[in-house]
Image 1 (cartoon, one colour):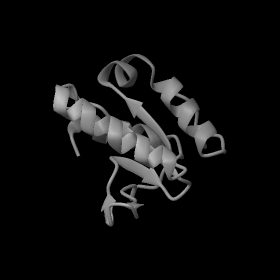
Image 2 (tube, rainbow, N blue to C red):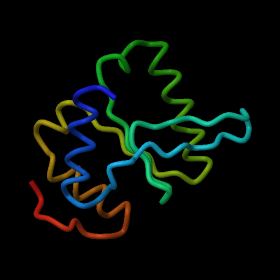
Image 3 (cartoon, rainbow, N blue to C red):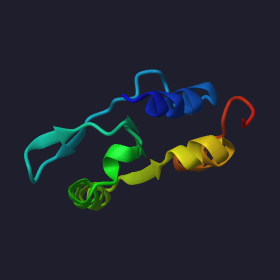
Image 4 (spheres, rainbow, N blue to C red):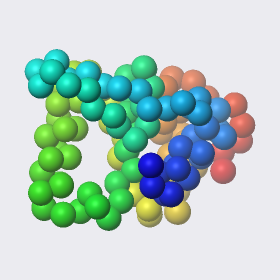
Length: 109
């Protein structure tokens, strides 16, 4: 995981929203394989850090297909960027808290 992805994970762990082991496989039955989102819970909630490597045209197209397939399988996918992490960590905690249907165990940053 990238350093910003790790910061996102630690933000959510410190808020009491995720355990430290957050790499939960998502099975894609149609393609007969598992994909590993940056962060996921069995809830089914997937959390992705979208860094610069996700901005190229081919990567954007692959990501769109991957997210659509997860939506179709019943997953809620949250995608965050460096600007979200830098400027609005409290919003991230609130959104993921609602998605996981429980309040953080510590204060919002």
